[in-house]
Image 1 (cartoon, one colour):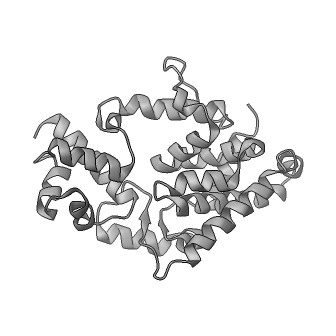
Image 2 (spheres, helix red, strand yellow):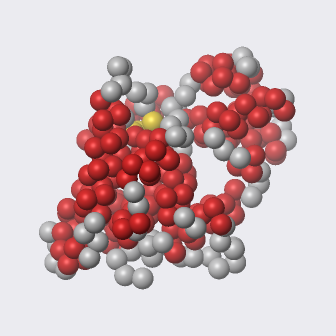
Length: 254
């Protein structure tokens, strides 16, 4: 097993699970058997050039997603979030800012794709502090275009609930009031995403957010223990509104 094969296989698995696709479904899309895809995800086999190009198209990612600079990409995203309002994150000044991460909407989309608790709760602070430059329909279209519209609705609703809790705390009312437009932005995002959810003839597949979920048993346990908001959006994660509230509180002052 080479390190390159293992890296590519792990990232294919993470992208597939994030979109709640089965191995059989992805295998059909790129023209391989389910058994071969399983071997690829375990680093025991590799894709042809044609299959790799199909994979990039299906996941809507660039080839750089599968190279070993993933750590730098994660740091770039953290830096961008820190610059845009997630002041509780420490910016690494040794990594130059990437042009594609300068735009607020793209940073939020990248955070939703990345999906880790630390990053996605930080995205809530960016939503709050940049509500005046965000257009809800445009943001939803951008994120739903990569199949993660429900995640955006889930993120918006959790942020809205967290802001409501903060408003009731001492000093919280004035802080929330300073970002008043966010309380217009977030309900619109929730409404747009909810309408898409209602249009589904059948319940959409579960969106497994936590990358640590590797077995059906763990998935079932996390699904059962998930918050009502997560259950509504069919998001499988341990993240709760209190996690968003903590991030918002931590980022209150630069």
